[in-house]
Structure formats: C-alpha cells, structure tokens
Length: 117
Image 1 (cartoon, one colour):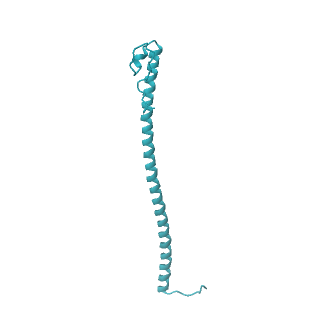
Image 2: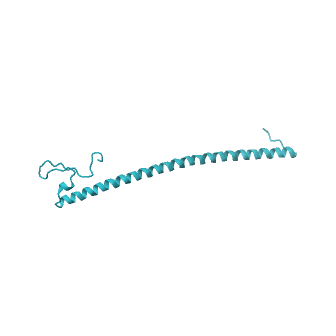
Image 3: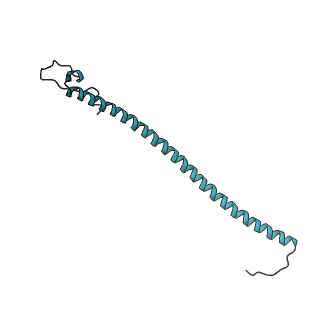
C-alpha cells in the first residue's frame, strides 16, 4: 500500500481520529481482558491455597490432639513404672486382677488396649 500525500478535509481527519481511537481502545480492551483473566486465576489460586491451609490446620490440630493423648499415656506408663520400680505393688497398676503369687499374672497396663496400639 502506498502512502499518498493528500490534503485531508475535516471528514477525513475525523475518520482517521476514530480509527486511531478504535485501535487504542481495542488494545486497552485486550489488556483489560488479560488482566481480568490473570486476576481470576489468582483468585482461584488464592481460594485453593486458603482451602489447603485450612486442611493443613485441621490435620495439625488432629495430630496435636493425638500427640497429647499419646503423651498422656506415656506419662502414666512412666509413673506406673516408677511406682513399681520403687517397690510398689505391680498388681495395683495391672488391669488383670489375680491372686498375688499364683504365677499366672499377665499384666496389661491401664491405658493400653489393642485398639489404641
């Protein structure tokens, strides 16, 4: 296409201005669309991150409760062991009641169930 040199009248100047404005607005529209798309992706990503953080907090809270329960059992077992080692009667901490000295004592410490192990 050649660029003819023409003296433009008022209507042609107006049309050229409209073409330039249309091109500028088209570019701005595309930039806005891309910005909006990026913001939507960030929003979805942010919501996913929020959900994952909430899930991680829930797992951490459950792990904390489980740890506290296990620590409680461990403290009780250590206390029972100290009691027995200090000369205390093992039958007082044993869950199985038997006649002392029969030889068939099978201690099962309190707090220990097959389901808990």
